[in-house]
Length: 63
Image 1: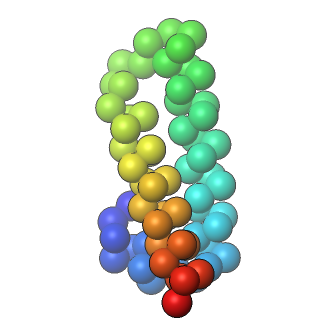
Image 2 (image 1 turned 60 degrees about the horizontal axis):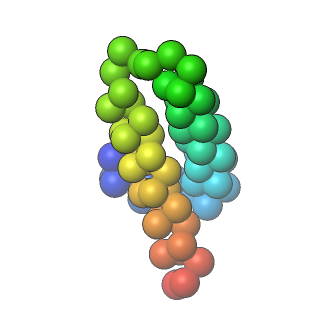
């Protein structure tokens, strides 16, 4: 997800997407542990998206 898409989302939407991406990250890590993924860079992309969502949520809570 791009920064602009994240900034346009509501707090509830951010929370839902964060949970969704965290689950996806855990699933990818487990799948990679069992059998190496064809594209292991997916893990990095999802992890960074989780970080972006969490950062935006924290920024909104602090305002």
